[in-house]
Length: 421
Image (cartoon, rainbow, N blue to C red; front, side):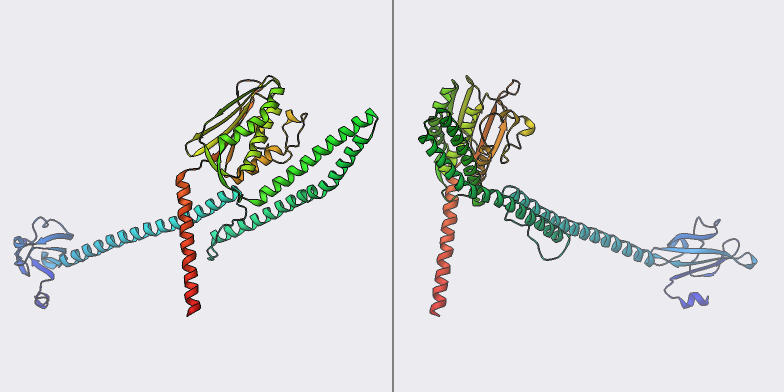
């Protein structure tokens, strides 16, 4: 009774009964229904069924047996605890949800940042592979793993470029330094050829002049390739009608093809315009046609075509010659490389290197394939795919030029204003 009196809000439940569950004292009237045979801890509802006058609430109690067979029920109103538990569970769920959302957002941002850094490295690497050897992978100055990787790759590129420049400088210097004495030697041999009366000596001098011409042609080709590779691009880029340029080259080489009784076919689509250096393009086209005639036997077939495919202009030369094995198609653009079957024919192995250098300046790609894959010899088809000139590109360049001019005018005006101030 004292404890009941000390707890006027009835947060604690007390009930003392006889062995027959008749109330002796407490703040509820009857024993909870269904728990008379139980012992230990029980859960029940405080309601009118147990004589509870307030709103229904949850309670948890323990049953004790005391002396004299009396039964004691001591419990606690757990409704507030249940509500508190529910609030805590809700807060935990919300907290876990927010944490998960923040984790996903943070992971997405980190992944995006990582992907962006990798994309920058890939894009720069692709541009370097396309010939822009002066480019380097940018760093952020954060000294993280990506910065260290970029610095290592940049140092590796610097070393590669240094070694390449060294090799190129040596070969170019040799070619340049030897060209002058070779020219003198060739002129002296030619003078000898014109002055001697002995037929045998004249024949030997003629062969020596031919060999000197071959050496001079090799050195000149080396120097041309070196100039093209160091130039990077040409300042003489103009609109060129590819079909007309190829037609001029065909007219020049058609007679050479007739000397070998070769069939010389032309399929030139009109109106195919590209942007390029006319002289360099003519040299590239001439080299490819000359190679086709040279490596195709008598009574063979030479085909020259120009066409437009989507955004590309295609120049194609096909022949029925000895062809190039598949495992050597990627190597023929190296300097001095010659296919095994062609080593007995005159040449220096620099023609396709020159073609590759010109194509690179014009942002073109060269595709080699067999003309007759199922036959022997398979022949060779060389397709040079170049960006076709369109009015859209012209308008874009004009807009960029106008913007650059406007920016320059603004800078000049700002400078003049500053000077007056």
